[in-house]
Image (cartoon, rainbow, N blue to C red; front, side, top):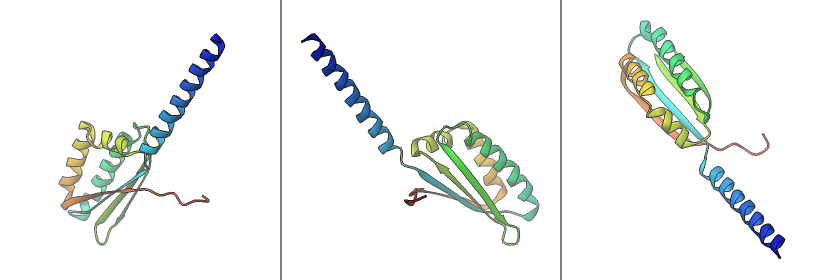
Length: 128
């Protein structure tokens, strides 16, 4: 009788663990963050790349960061950064940090107009 009680508790703990794991993965939706802007002048583009490198180092401190691609067009002065995150909460934790906000402000000073930031829920096509 005592062993049935222990088995029941063990099964209960296993089910609770499975439910917690499922809830954790269900709430951790992958996110894509896209930032676009126009650099104020072509001579500021090297500074933009330096700030981008510094931001990437901060992103890499998060376990939820998956990668970033940065691209720019020297003729139009348009810049785009696309980062991928395993969860919105991980992305927001970095985006609200003092270190990131400071670099984001530096980037804003290098831009003509505002930086446009959009986030999207990611979908990974089946069969990859």
